[in-house]
Amino acid sequence: MTTFGKIDLQAQVVNGECPVCTEKSIFISLHKTIYRCTTCGSDIEQKINGKISYMPYVTPKSKLELTDEPKT
Image (spheres, rainbow, N blue to C red):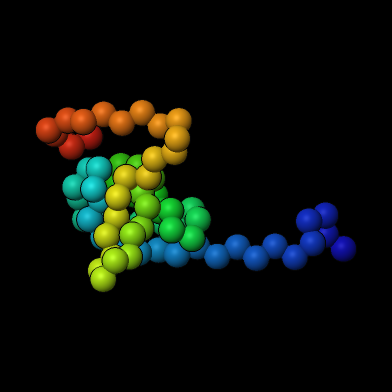
């Protein structure tokens, strides 16, 4: 018998262009639609609306900075 019972972990790994660092990168799923960029470490949200696109993931407590240059 285990302490936590049966644990089912599944991660998805996908390719795409990160909207934060603008690099072609690999994304690893943290949640069903939330991914982390392996290049810059930013969390992004997958949007599906005719095509798959990625947007920076923000929470109600997140601060957004608007800049002309990508974050490095």
